[in-house]
Amino acid sequence: MEIMISGLAGIIGYLIGSISSSRLISRLIASEKSLEDLKYTMQINNQEQKGTILTGYGGDRVSVVLGVRWGLFIGFLDMLKVILPMIIFKGILYPQEEYHLIIAITGLIGHNWPLYYRFKGGRGLSVIIGSYFVIDFFGAITTNVFGFLIGIFLLGDIMIAYPLGYFLMIPWFLLRTNDLLYFLYAVLSNVIFLISAIPEIQEDMKMRREGKYEDYRKSLLTSTPRWRGMKAIEDYILSLGRIRIIIGVFSFVTFFLILAMLPSLSFE
Image (tube, rainbow, N blue to C red):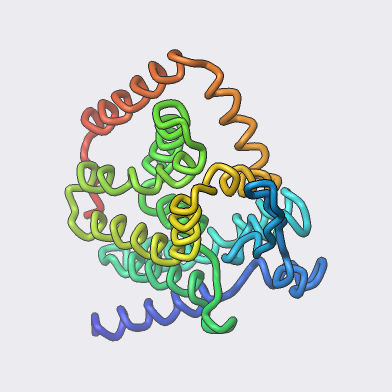
């Protein structure tokens, strides 16, 4: 019986996760083709280089075509894809079991490699944060806030700060829940994200080898409305000098102090 329910949860999660909010909304408001044809022009070593602005299909891509508000709306819809079925399984159908974690993982896989769109999907950060909200809302908020603070103030890189909170959920679940399943879920969700981001990682490494990384990074940070806003934040914080490092170290220490002082979270 448990195997059947696990399989059912997996199928439900994958099929719902495969629904592409970005494609559906762009088809209603503009055209799906506008997402496919989206290009950027990069200035690298004083030469123009054209390419696909984003390899994934999500809020960032939609924000370029339809604006920031629609991009945020897409992110919200992507979160709901896992939040609603997770709540139904955990809060209503099987409150004593962990089938909602299967929903979360297969929903993420469906989002990143959707059945309905030849397995070309997004990167799944909205899906991941949606699942974290269901499991531990306070933890999801805390790790994202401190991940951003540590990444931007201590490391001085907005592109590291953006996903760092998701990786902080690994020690958070390990120490906060003392439950191996939730720890493994945090690890696996981040691994799936990294696998889906391999095209970006490969391009990043290529540009570093060719000595074009700074121009490449600058072009990426001006490619979408959200990244342009985040770059402005980065520029301001980098101008703070030593104060930036002090705030970064304080944020790092504070995060782990909070984690050490909180009582364990029980899902029994």
